Length: 173
Image (cartoon, rainbow, N blue to C red; front, side):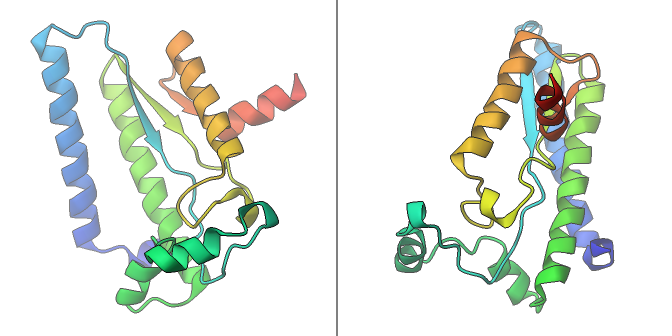
């Protein structure tokens, strides 16, 4: 879907990020000084780039504030600069990028004994779950914070906590 728009440059960037994190984690491990250090990475949910103005009565000043400080269009602007103006294509591109970055961190978690990954994909299911196109509302961040707490208190054997799956399972308990 969105993969057809991903370039070799983007994959080079992702591999550079992975190599840098790998070196960092390897240095922590090899130093012998941080044997009890728990490292937790976090991957974004599938962000929703949009041209729409987010307007909620309890955040009534948000669009005005965003306009005043030229903020809130974190994803749409770079896509527009690349000539991508279709909202659905923009979402597919972001979905592919976010999938790849989550995979990167989950893979690193499998490589290092003290590294864990919190996968936030599926946490925000609707447009209204987002404060702006890149930041979730507080109640969603609270769910992610619970995943951190769970990871710290009882690190997962599979090294990855999926926030959306955790939410689904706790709703049945």
